[in-house]
Image (cartoon, rainbow, N blue to C red):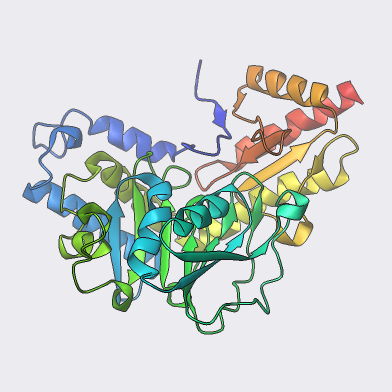
Amino acid sequence: MGRVYNFSAGPAVLPEEVLKEAAAEMLDYRGCGMSVMEMSHRSSMFQQIIDEAEADFRKVLGVPDNYKVLFMQGGASLQFAMVPLNFMRDGKADYIITGQWAKKACAEAKRFGDAEAIASSADKTFSYIPDVTNLPIREGAKYLYICENNTIYGTKYHTLPDTKGVDLIADQSSCFLSEPVDVSKYAMIYGGVQKNVGPAGLVVAAIREDLIPTDDLPDVPTMLQYKIHADAGSLYNTPNCYAIYICGKVFKWILDMGGLTVMKQRNEEKAALLYDFLDNSKLFKGTVRKEDRSLMNVPFVTGSEELDKKFVAESKAAGLENLKGHRSVGGMRASIYNAMPKAGVEALVSFMEDFEKKNS
């Protein structure tokens, strides 16, 4: 069997060129006689890999000089604790709840202090983004936290919240590097890389330097302090070396493709193919309010659990993998990240047309 079209929400599809390059270097990275997997993180060769990865990430995203770029382990879920432990510090933190991950992040912050949900779209199964133009941001709030693209529910903030001068922190895991971003509008952006950038187990963050506590935080475990990672150039302990290496290749791939402006155009084209079909279909329908639709994650249903199951089984047999929706929404979900080729979305739409004819 050849490669399938993989619509998984994460770990997800990676650019084929990157995989081929990594395969060619698997046993011998640039003539050093060993794999990156075997290399000391203290070697000059790995230092070059991480330095290049950071430089290219800064170039891709346009990260200003007064932001630290950190490569950290523990997935996005560890950030749910690190953010309040480092930034809430005897203050308050406000959260907007647009899905499971923002909900979990807020619940985690409550363990450490006064965190509160000030807006939510839970009333309609997170199928929309709440109005963020006049939020009841609390006096003394140290930051406002959002999950910018909601993988499970297929929603995306197309306008950032008016924070009324409070720092904005965004989990961008499932829209990471999918379109141009003005980093200066955020105090911190982070993303688990397994959706759009690399293998699971790594988080990349851009954090405004003045936000990072300058002193040791005696009540916070060493490994959960941003200062420790920033001071050590992400090499305080052995990092996820291989994931950093692959992400570095993906950053180069994005630059070679023409950067984030081109990525966004490609992603808009792919998403339009699928959304246009859904909007005109008599069998399938999207589950998200139109103005809040994600370019990355597209949930849809037939209205019949039986037909949904049949669709998932038959699409898998046709080489369209991982289209089953998340259990909280049901139905199907197509994750069409940067590395999903347009041909994959065309194959999906063609299969859906055929399925509709046979099952109407």
